[in-house]
Image (cartoon, rainbow, N blue to C red; front, side):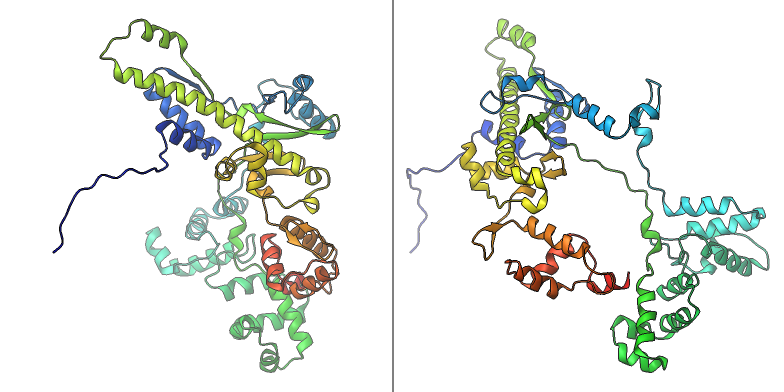
Length: 468
């Protein structure tokens, strides 16, 4: 027989206090989420005063004396802006002499495909009805530039009533297909490629490429060159030239346009070289200012009663938030400082000098747990002379080479990029050839690893590079 009974046992288990849970939650947040979370807390907590970041991208020295000397506090980020202005030939002075000038006016804005086509349509001298039908065709295009609906559906949508409507719509379609980018307003991939082939100067290559696109597109997709040559009745050399011409075309002409929002990354930490050594500083212009409203707290303590437990909890929560915010800032700065100290060669010479680095290495140097380092580097960014990188970018496992040392994958990616950039246009490196070349230099990595690194660099395969 089974029975249910209650027993009391003593045991130990790790339990996170509410304050520790709050600190961990703030630490792993990105700067944007961190700012929003503090502002939401300030709305419900009268003792907490949170000022939003000014976004002036100003880096102040907030490091401890053990990290930076007191003389470094005299160096301002404005000096870096002055050097940038000097290197650009006084660009900022030539832009405007008006103090009210807004630099956001110089932010590039991507034009969407429809606006681009409407701009071309606007310079044509057309009758109002012709312009209206051309605008209807443009508005019916999808983001890739294709016309996915039929002209009959467009005719129903425009609600125009005259006997030559379908013929006029076909004329409007041909008019839009003549716009830039070539291939726009096509109703199929084959038609899109054929529209672009009209601009090919070599008549022989153009004729054979049109035959491939019109009748043998499946053979082209499967790369069966011999069967394709037999179907065309041409030599493999002539067929290969036509294929290379087709591969240079864009099957999605509308993808180059878009109305996506232009996004920028605000670094949390900035590193710069000062008197021959690399220094790290917080970007205080991106951080909210958090403080305890001492006057309100003192007034509460003066008139506190026994039934004011909710207000006492708010005061304790505000103090936790201020302390946790300060701890978050110091932890991120300490970790970034150690990363900079370990990756000095990267700062000096670029990605080829990146060293392998693990979370435990940084954790032991800072004196925290590796999980704390993992949370601290999540969605945190470091501004360097080589660009802005997420702190995760500097962590990688080492790959051994014949010389006895280890190299970071980022360094191998940079080496692969240099090899591809120096290749002959007529005979580019294949992934297997790159693997053999790296093996001769002491890096024994598989061909599939080279392929993964090449794809991570957004570099086309050897076939497309040869065609380009």
